[in-house]
Amino acid sequence: MTFAPTRPIGPARNRFLGAVYARNSSAVMSRGMLATRSSNAAIVVSGFFEPVFYLLSMGIGLGALVGTVVTTTGQEVSYAAFIAPALLAVSAMNGAIYDSTWNVFFKMNYAKLYEGMLTTSLGPLDVALGEIGLALLRGVLYALGFLIIMQSLGLNLSWTAILALPAVVLIAFGFASLGMAVTSYLTTFQQMDWINFVMLPMFLFSATFYPLSVYPEPIQWVVQALPLWHGVELIRGLTTGALSVALLGHVLYYVVMIAIGLVFTTSRLKKLFLD
Image (cartoon, rainbow, N blue to C red; front, side, top):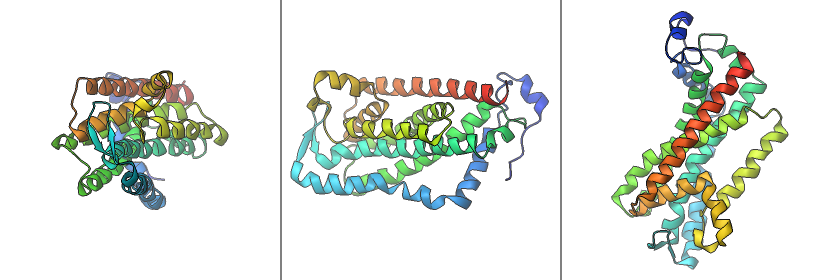
């Protein structure tokens, strides 16, 4: 196991946030990228194709039977153009969640990697930002590939679709941040199954394949509380060109989600390995 050079302990601890942050999260990211390249690159690549298969089978196949769908903003679009932005958000979520949950769980509980990192000048916030950055990179790569496929199939209906890329970064950041925070509290493989128990229904019911209006009003409130729904609506608004103030609300939702995830992850790592 090889770590990138870290900064001296003394000066780092004298800076703002010095107790938890040595400004060297890139060392954690570099180590993760080397490990990914040498051990599980094939698994990383395979994860990209799941939403692509959904798009081809349901968007193109089922879409021929469904015809057009009306979005939340009243636009009438083809079924493929309706679900494609939702699958783009799902692609970003999947990439970020894998690295920030199962990957982090193994490193924390079995490889004891973070214990080793925190005996150097690295602080818990360096570890949190490095791991989240790694998860973010994977989510963005998935999303970029998916966005190119959407463009080639003519499913980006407006020039504002280019803004979906930074939006995807925000979505991936939100899920990676919260995913790592939740994983820091899990200690067994059985508990990790709870993540799938939450992720699958959220994927199916976040207005991914159907408009929100098909659900009864109480169910709509529940759906609108889910983070993926905000990501889907944000991306859908950008790819269809339906810009509104509501998009800022979706952005704010993820900003809060990121802040909460970072605070919980940092405090949890500090409690586990430094206190």
